[in-house]
Length: 221
Image 1 (cartoon, rainbow, N blue to C red):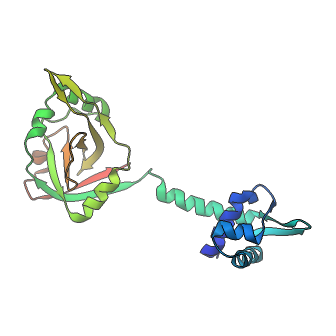
Image 2: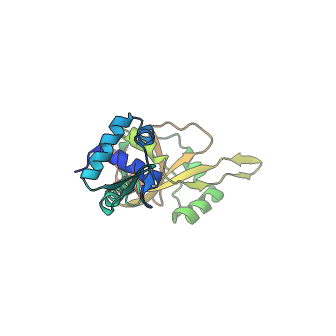
Image 3: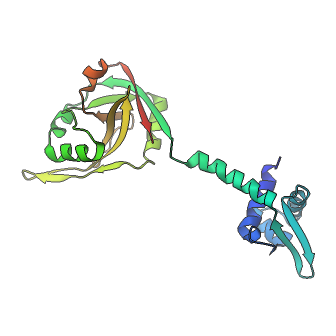
C-alpha cells in the first residue's frame, strides 16, 4: 500500500520525465518539486525504491531515477479513479422541492413560435403553453449550483413586433419519467432556489400535483 506522500513523489518523478526512462534528479530538485526539504525528498525516494516503484542508478554526475512498471501501474490506477470522479457520463442529480405558483409568464413565452420551434428542435418535444415552478429545499439549492457546470442547451433570443425577446438556456430532465427541461432566462438574475420547467404536457395535471406538493427533478447525463 503506497502512502499519499510516496504517491505525490512518484507523480513528481513522472512529471520530470521518469516514465520515459532514467532522468537526472537531485534531492534538492525533487524537494523543490515536492515543496519539502532535500532530506525528506531523499527519504521518499528510498521508500519508493524499497517498494519497487522506481529504480535508482548512481552515476558520476548524480542519480538517475526511472519509474518501474509497478510505479506506472500505480499512477494509472490513480488516474483511473480521478476519471471515475470527474467523468460526466452517468452523472445523476436529483433536485427536490415543492410546487409553487409562478407569475404566469411561462404561458405567454411558451406560446411564442420562435421559442416553441427551438424547443421542438433541441429538446425533441412541443412545449405545453405553461411552465411548472418549483422551490428547492436548501440541500437541493447546492446541487442546483453544480448544474451550472454542465453543458446547457442555448435557446436564442429574437425580435418580433418591434420587441426583443431574450435568450435562455435549457437542461433536459425528468419528473416521474416525464421528459421536461429546466429553463433559465439569460438576461435576468433568476432566484437560485427556483427552477422553472417546460414539458410537452401540463405537469400539474399529468403528475396530479398542486402547490406545496413535493416533487423530484432527475437530471442524468
